[in-house]
Length: 96
Image (cartoon, rainbow, N blue to C red):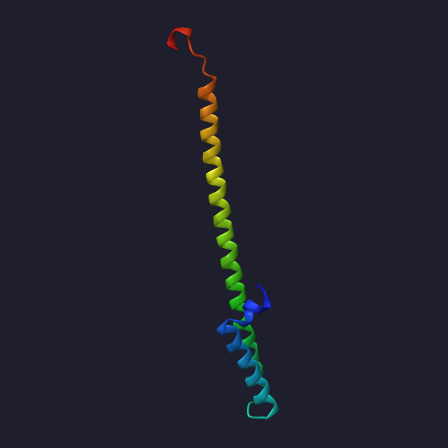
């Protein structure tokens, strides 16, 4: 996913806000270091998990589209094979 698409997501901005709060809390000593680290890790998890879910969803949609195309191609090939077999059947001269 491109950077422009990532920056349009609310989840990304919430994660960035969490990282900023963790850094601010740590450097102003409003939070203990362990709480700041927890907040930073959770913020990063939120950002990257969201991206991973979106990527997995896109991959599954692409796989489904490929399967549909393969099935359509198989049906088309089967119909062409049947038409070819019918065309090869010799006809008697009296039937025309």
